[in-house]
Length: 231
Image 1 (cartoon, rainbow, N blue to C red):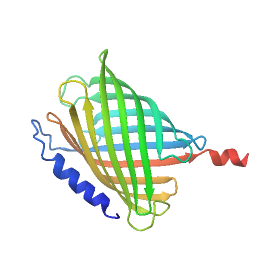
Image 2 (spheres, one colour):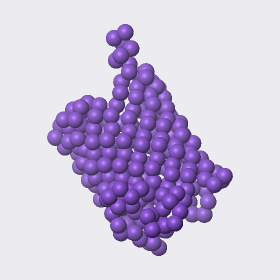
Image 3 (cartoon, one colour):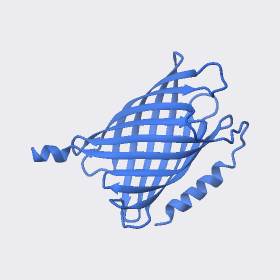
């Protein structure tokens, strides 16, 4: 079970790299993500995220995203239910005349299943999105699988070095059903029980789009229920 993350990543790479690509951009970009989870009660929490994609390792903005949502987890349940909004702006490369070629608003709903095991944390997520682009609404569905494997401790907690792997498939209702693939792997470290950083690699592509990124993630959790108990 401890090596499930390695097996999953290998399987994902072999399956997805077999797709035929009509366009390929070999320049390595960077993807920076900052997010937080704030717990208001034992059942209700808020998620907030800010992400920056770059065409290259140096700052050359490809896209930036702000995403926020609320989640509800019933007592003693591995399932959670959430909804929120996202605001995106996509930028053209520096040699293009128009600096911003697309602004996009999204409404999203999500169902997630999480299981924490002694040697692996397992997360499944189904998200549906309504994307408002140029006065049109596009519907997308995303299915994501993620595993966290601790490398030096039993379980994920303070001072844990861990491996994270994930694979995601994007589905739509127009043209081809399978819209895009995304997979990646990163090494992370828990500096505190609620503070972590990750550094790794991510690949996102379909038949017309191909981008590879160095990925850095900074994340922290805030538990306000402890503050309420003190009061």
